[in-house]
Length: 437
Image 1 (cartoon, rainbow, N blue to C red):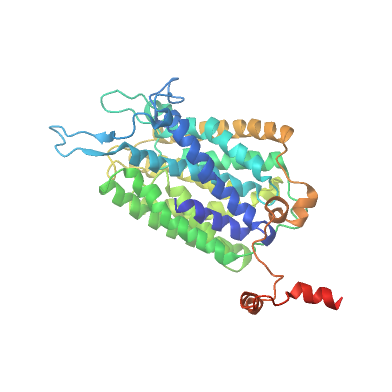
Image 2 (spheres, rainbow, N blue to C red):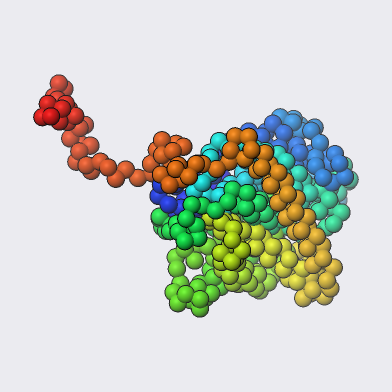
């Protein structure tokens, strides 16, 4: 829950001041749209018993049927006398937050030029057709007694993804690339790239994301246990290493480390460690973090070479970072940290796990990219997806929301106090001006 407004500030600080409210709203509306769909059918499609060979869940839990009063986890047994159970609704709510922020992540790729209601409709359609099935692939594990048949990536392929490198970041990054290509470049880009209007907002957002990510990653252990502690630690050290890696690249390329770079490096590290958080050692996490920081810092410039306008580097950070973390599990995963995982190449496991990771990453990337293009195109030819050139130049906030983030036209606090203290019956400033005229 904290991560979504954190993302809104992270993205909002990077856009022009005339578009910041629209950016905040594109993130905030994800809470509303996905929250409603999750209750109606989203949870059932993602985590219901499998309906089509590991592709999507059934509709047995529509309206969260069967979840109120139910428990999830493992029951006490002779081998595990304590068991580990928790309310099913706690898991329902936890997974809802993944669904919300995955949708919100896409918005950064099409900042400064998107119709609000077109985006809102897209968010609902994309969550339904892309995210819910992919979440089933990756997160729906079969129960020990075989009563629940889950997703194909989790159960048949057995690729590792602790907290959403594929389902969240590769998924959203591929969608961001598709929409950036579909909507086209902003007016004046790349000559006018649009400088961030509020860098402190960016750092604030990155900090909220970092804090919220502990729930994202450590929470994916579904208990206060050793795996949660490992994820808590690896999330921290990988992010720290990524900040350093990104800033070193900036120093070498541009001669100065930037605040924007530090914030972006942190998010790159968080993205990359997400799939690996519960499967790698502290040193493995450091390696993944610094590699992600360096590669993502280099990747953000690809949009200029390849000619696609990914406004806020969703592709360079989330798609590339998700791919880095997912693939590096094939090298750094170790069963000494988590027996439920696998051994990567550096721990004697050979290339088998790397191959599984590549298949999972490629499948999610292709599915998300193609379906996003189709959904985006349908919206484009019906209600239109992009604002007019005039509205883009004027500012999306005024054009679509009739608001501005900052009021620079008033006379300051004194005018407000004077107005508040005006005696009853006294003439207004406007009437005095009219009399003078």
